Length: 112
Image 1 (cartoon, rainbow, N blue to C red):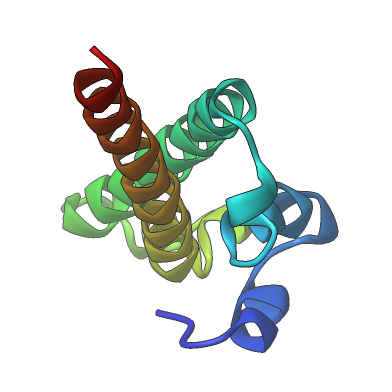
Image 2: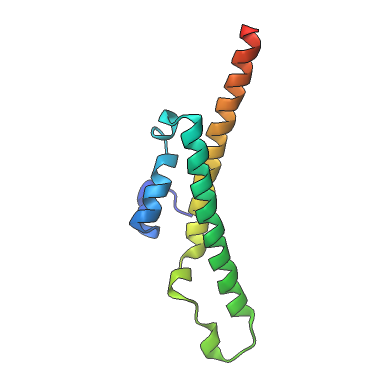
């Protein structure tokens, strides 16, 4: 898994990194609830697609077919690391959403 933003840039394409970049602080703190929910949906879609690539690669490796069938597709290379990056980004966004919801509930109780 990439430990830094620079590591993520190396593993992700520009389009993928553009989707992950807002999940890092301080940009994450500036997003409102609607934007966070939208970002979570995008990240969840990317995570699912990357997870499917990883599963397909593992299926190809397990097959007892001829060796030429064991080659992984080009887009599946590095899929495990990309999957971990998307999962970490989604975790950051969900944590921020949970905090905002918790603050809203606490604020509602104090006012009422």
